[in-house]
Length: 111
Image (cartoon, rainbow, N blue to C red):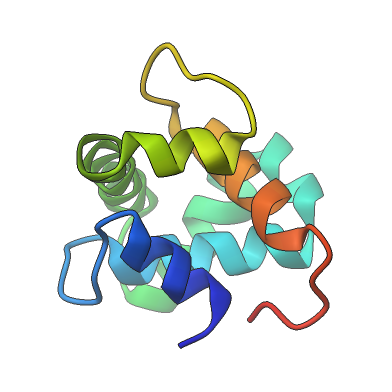
C-alpha cells in the first residue's frame, strides 16, 4: 500500500468506499502539481472525471462525501494531517491542500 492509500485507510476511506478512487486520483494530481488547487474544476475534477468516466459534478460530490466520511471517522487524524486545530470539516479544496502538505513533506516516492 502506498502512502496515499495508507492515509486514506487511516481516515476510514477503504477502496470499497464510494469516492475512494476519485480521491486517490485527485490527491495524485495535486501532488504532481499543487498549482492545480487554484482551479479545482478545470485541473482536478474534470481530469478525474475523464479518468473515471464521470461528469465533474459527480466527482465533486464524491470527493465531498469522502471528506465528510474522513471527518466523521477520524477527526483527530485530520487535525494531525492539517497540522493545526480544525474547528469544522474542511472543504474539498482545503482537504486536498492538507493532503498535499502532509504527503509531500519529506517524501520523494509517494505514489
